[in-house]
Amino acid sequence: MINCNGSILEQYSDIQSDLIAQLHTQFSITEILRFEKNSLLFWEQHYFRIISCLRRHRFEIPMNFTMDFLAQQIHLLMEVSALDIEAALIRFQFVHYKGEIAFIVSYSVKPLLQFQSKTKPYTLDLFKEDGIAANSLSNMSSTNVTLLTIAKSYARENGLDDCVLLNNQKNVVETLGGSLYLFQENKLLTPALDSGCQDFVMRTAFNEWIRKTNNPQIELIEQHINPFELQKSDELMVVSIENGGQSVSNYRKTTYKVGRAQALFENFLRELH
Image 1 (cartoon, helix red, strand yellow):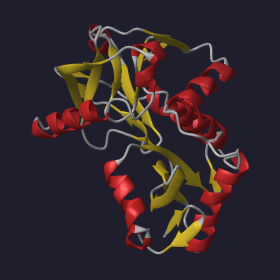
Image 2 (cartoon, rainbow, N blue to C red):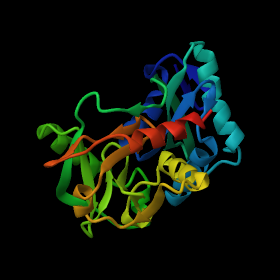
Image 3 (cartoon, rainbow, N blue to C red):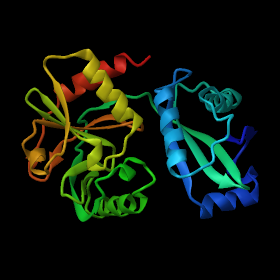
C-alpha cells in the first residue's frame, strides 16, 4: 500500500505515469522514519528536518504541510493497510510535480529497534577513494549520494560489513551504516556536524538523551576525529534509525569488546515508548 498525495494506492504501478517519470528523472528528497507500537518515533525532529531540507533545496512549501498534516498521511497509510504491524520503516519522498510538491509515503515491515550484539562479526575499514566536504551541505542526506553508492560497492567488493567515511580534511565523518560512536574510558566521541556527517534524527535524539541523563560515567564529546582514534578506542558503535545500535567487532587488526555500548543503547531504547 502507498499514500500518493493523500490517495491510498495498492502499488507503485497505480501512480500516474508522469509522476513516476518525475521520480525517476528529477531530484527528490527522502526521509526515513520509524513507526513503532502505533506511534511515530521522533516525529517532531523528523518534521523539522524535512521542512529544513525542502527549504534549502528551494521547494515551495505548501501552507498545508503542517506537522499534523504530514503525520496524518503516515497514520492514514498504516490504518488503511489494516495490518498488525509492531514496527515499520516509513519512507517519505517529496518531488517537484506540475509546479507543486508531490509526496509518496510507503513502508516496509521491520523488527523493533534493538541493539545488534556480536552474534556475528561486523567488520569495517576506511573508504579513502574520495572524501565528503566538511560543510553544512553534507549534513543533508541528499548531498553525497554518489559517493555513498561507490563506497557501498567498495565494501561489498572487499568483504566488509561497513566502511568509515572521511571528509576532505581526512577526519572521520560517519559510516555507511549510520552515525559512529567511539568509547574511550569515560568518553564517548562522535564526529561534530561541521565534519560533514548527516544530521540524522536518530543521532540527534541519542545525543540529547545522553546529555539529559547526566551520566557521570560517560561524557559525550562531539569533535573532529582523526582515524587513529578508531584503534585507540575500547568499543565502536554505529547508530541508525534502520538498525538501531550495532557493535563493531573489527577495524583492520583491532578487535573490540562489547558491553558499555549495549548497556547504554538499551537504556536509551527503554525510554522511547
